[in-house]
Length: 123
Image (cartoon, rainbow, N blue to C red):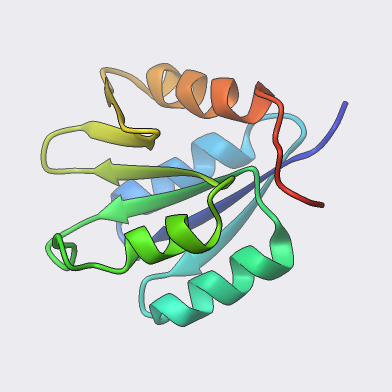
């Protein structure tokens, strides 16, 4: 079984801790947690070093339309990115899919589906 690599960039709160717990409980998934206390450039550097299959970004009050998320996607166009919002329990999956999260299994199934797709990112 091939290990799937996931970067989780989020606040130090209950949502982020729960997401990390759900992800690390999956067999064959390696999760790298980065606190949002780290700046965006740190996230980009870790993505370049770790070569994840998926990046999950917790949305919060800090996110806005001018937020540099698009730069990450533009600089790494083959990267899969998920944003998670506690406000409305929605995930944004780039290529722009919205998924309603009603349970932890909903979250895991979306991440699993993305990590099971063939990745074209260099390893």
